[in-house]
Amino acid sequence: MDMWLVVLAMAAALSTAVWYSKAENDVYMLKLLSLILWGATIMVFVDHVMGYLMEGGEFLEMSVEATVLGFVLLVSALVFWEIVLLIKDPKRVLHKSKT
Image (cartoon, rainbow, N blue to C red; front, side):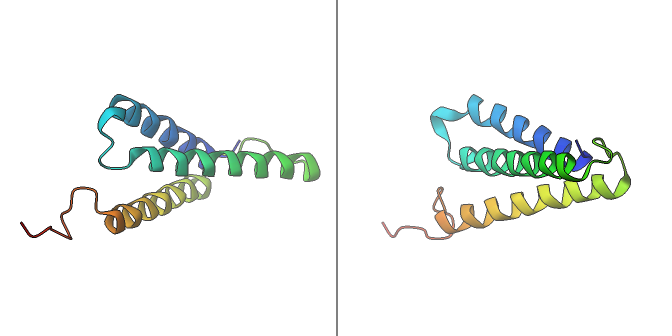
């Protein structure tokens, strides 16, 4: 388990908890953020397990590079979520309706 997997899993768990507490009024599309982060976490976990089984080596890598990669992946997921949020514009901030 790499540090980048830990960072993604923690972010996924935190976003799921926040989404669940506000599920009745999911204005900011936190469900989508949770799905993005859980999807990335599962994908990274499967990839890491397959690499470990095929090549061996260390299963746990705690390095600065692995931590930085985890935060880069997290920022990438957040940027993607924010782009979708801006396109959907759930609070009608960018596309105000004329009344």
